[in-house]
Length: 119
Image (cartoon, rainbow, N blue to C red; front, top):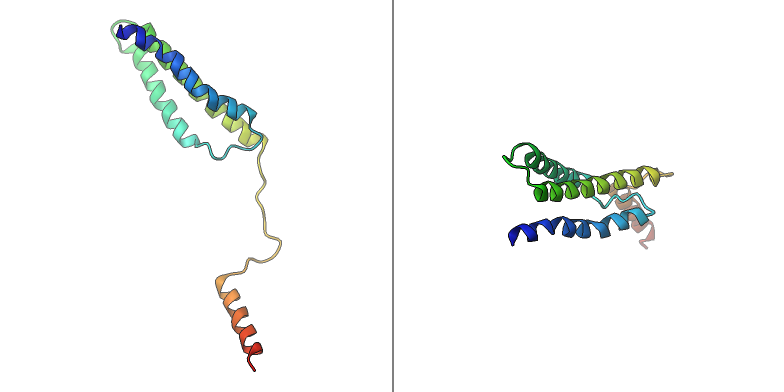
């Protein structure tokens, strides 16, 4: 019974990642709100699980390999799409055209204006 339930996890994993993948594909922005660091860590843990399933288990468990393969493919897709969107829709840095006012310059301007406004 548990074997059947576990074999369905691969389908559930793909169904869980699919909305995120579709949203990223449709995005017309550089997707800076997606954390590449987090997804990379999940890719690392997923790849370790896949390598364990392939090389360390005494018998090859196809359900375990399948679930980890689907997981790894989905995570890699999210990372690749995000990096592609960041490159495609790269926003150039906004450079100030005038010097940026500091707190001190604003305070000096207020003090000067107050002195001239006094009767």
